[in-house]
Amino acid sequence: MTERIEQIETEARAAVAEAGSGAELEQLRVRYLGRKAELTSILRGISELEPDQRGPVGGAANRARKGLEQLFETRSDEIASAELEQSLAAERIDVTLPGSPARAVGHLHPITRTRRLIEDVMIGLGYQVMEGPEIEHDYYNFTALNHPPDHPARMLQDTFYVEVPEGGDSGGGSQDVLLRTHTSPMQVRAMEATPPPLFMIVPGKTYRRDSDATHSPMFHQVEGLAVGEGITLADLKGTLLAMLREVFGPDREIRMRPHFFPFTEPSVEFDVSCFRCKGSGTLRKGERCALCKGIGWIELGGAGMVDPNVFGFVRESGYEPDSITGFAFGFGIERIAMLRHGVGDLRLFFDNDLRMLEQFS
Ligand SMILES: [Zn+2]
Image (cartoon, rainbow, N blue to C red; front, top):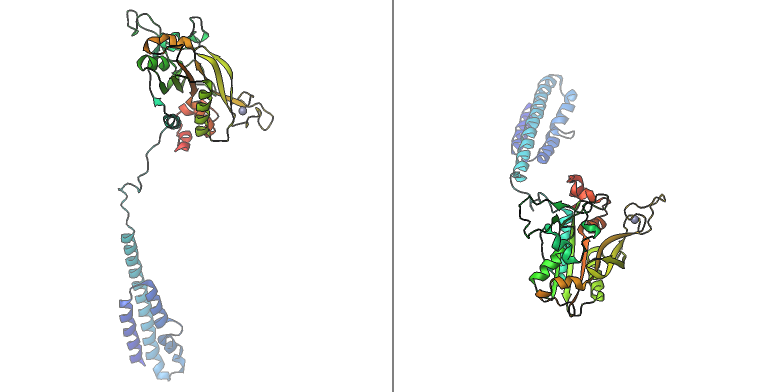
C-alpha cells in the first residue's frame, strides 16, 4: 500500500510540473486531492486496514497529501505570476506614444468658428473675403459713408477716438483717428481699389462704447457689399435669406423691417426670432425676456441699398451713381454665435473661462 502511495505522489509531481495553466492545475488538483481521488479513498479506508498497517499507511498517505498540497500551492503561484507576465507583455502600452488618433490640445474659439462658417457660406455665394484696418480714419468710418458732421455716432460717448500725438502723423493729414465702429469703412476702401462689379465680405473686430448682455466694447462684425449693374433690394433679400438659412437652418424665423442708415437708402433691419423665449417675449414665470427685451425678436443686423452719395465718393474708381447699384449688410458675429449655441450673455465669449469654451470643442 505504501508503494502505491509513493507511485501516486511521483505521478502527481510529474503531472504538476508539466501543467501549463491554472485551469490545467485545477484539474490535476481534483484528480489527485479531490473527494474521488485515490489518495483520498486510501485515507478514508485506513480504519478498515489491519491494525499494524494503519500506522505506516496512514503516515505515508498524510505526508503524501501534505506534500502534494504544498506543491499545488507553489505551482499555482508560479503559474499565476507567469500568466500575469504574459498578459502584461501582450498588452504592453507605450505611454510615451501619442494617442491614436492624436488628441487635439485645443480648438478654435466659437467666435472664430462662427466667422469661418459665415465666410464659407458667403464664398459659396461667390463673395470674396477681405480685411480692413481696425484703427481707421474718420473719413472712411463716417464721412465717405454719408455720416454728416453732427451725426450722433461721431460723438465721444459712442466711439473710441485715438489721440494722435502733437506733431504726429495720423496717416492722412488732419483727420481724426478712431477705432472703427463698424466694418463698413472697407466698403469705400474696396471700391477705391476695385472697379465694379464687386462682391465682398469683411469680417473683423469693431469697437463701440457699449457693455451689456448683448453688447461688448469690442465685438466682431461681418460687412457685406455687392455692387454692379441692376442689383436690387430683391437680390439683398435673397442673399440674406440664403445665408441665414445656411447658418440657422429652417427653424428660425426671419423678418425685415424698414430702418435708417446714413449710407444705405432704402435701409432695413433684419431680425431673427428669440431662442430663449421662442419669440414670445416672456419667460415661463411671466417674466420679461431680457435677451430680446420682451420683443421676441433679436436684431441681427442692418442692410440696405448703397446710398448714391457713397458712390459719389468713389466715382473716379468707376462707381457712377447713375448706372451702378448695390446693397450692403452688416451684423455681429457674436449675435450669430449666441443664437446658434444658446448663449445668453455675449460677454461669456471673452471671459476666457475654459468651462464655457470647452463646450464648443
Ligand atoms: Zn426673448
